[in-house]
Image 1 (cartoon, rainbow, N blue to C red):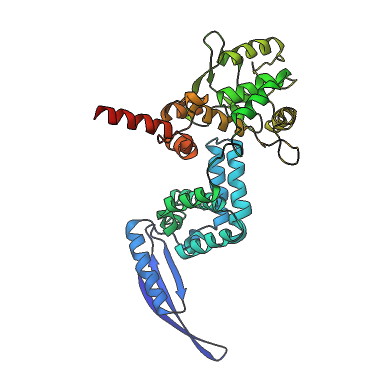
Image 2 (cartoon, helix red, strand yellow):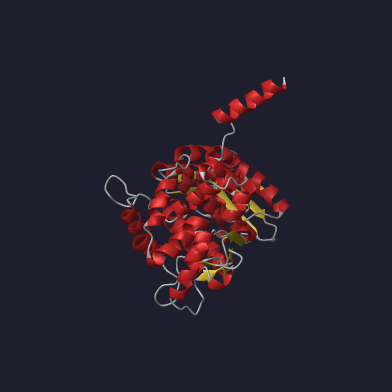
Length: 389
C-alpha cells in the first residue's frame, strides 16, 4: 500500500497527480487518483484502517444510493413485510432520496453530504417527514453494510442522530397536544352521535366508540372473536388498506377488550341482520369482504356526524377520520368516574388500546390524566391535614 506521485505532459503542459495503490482484504488491487497529496494521504490512512478491519469497499465494488435502495426494497419484500409498508418505503426512495442523492455512490457518501441532504429535505418538507426519510436512508445504508457494499452508515454518525430526543420534543411542540373538542370528540358530541346512529352504522360506529379499536381492526373483526356471553371481544387480526387480512400491528395489538351492555345488545341485533361472510366478518360489505376505510368514513362516520349536528362552521362533519373515536375511547378510559369516565391507570389504558409500549400511551394521552391538584381535592386534603394537627 503506497502513495506515489505521477507526472505526465498533456498538450504541452506538465501535469501531476497523486496515486494511492493498495490491496484490499480480498487481495484485489485498487488504484485511486487525487489532485492533492493531502487528500491522497488522508484516503491512504483511512483505507489502511478499513482493510485491517476487513470492512473496506472500493468504489468499483460500490453501488449508488438508489441501487442500494432497490436492494433494500427487495429485501423487505422477501421478508414479507406488509404491502402498505413496502409502498411507503418505495415512496421515500422515489420521491425524496433518489431525486437528491440517488446517483451518489455509497463509498462517496459522507457525513457532511448526509447532513446537507437532511438540510435540503427540511426546506420544503415537514420535520416529521424529514425524520422518517432519514430513518429510511439509514435503513438502506444498514442493509448495504450487511451486503458488503459500504463500510459505514453515515446517517448513524449524524449529530442529529445523537440528539434525536431533542428533535422529537421539537416535533411534539409543533404538533401540539390532542385537544378535546378539536381532535377528541366531547362526551356531549358522542352522546348526540350515538342518539342518531341507525342501521348498520350503529353497530360499527358504536363498537369504534366503546372499544377504541383501530379502523383496520374493526374491518377485520370476526364474529368468532366476539364473545357476547362474556361481553368481551378479542383482537386477533386486522384488514389493511388493500383489504388483506393479517395479524395486528404488534404483539400488544392482540388483546381482549370488554364490551358495555349497550354494545352487547346492539351487536346481538346486528348479528341477525349482518350480511353473510365466508370470512365470518362482523362488519363486511355487501359481498362479505372487508370494507374500505374510506367507505366507512365517507358513507357512515361523516354522515352520522352531520345528522347529529356535530359539524364545523361550514356545516361539514367536524372530525375527519375514525381515529377521533379511538381518541375519545382513550379519554373515556382516562377521565375520572365523577366526570363519567372509567378512571383507569395508564398501564391498563395501554393494554386496552393495544399500544406496543406504555411510552406511546403516555406521550399521546398523558396530558389527559387528572393532574391531582383539583381545587376541591386540595381543600379536602388541607382540611384533613389540619384536623390531624
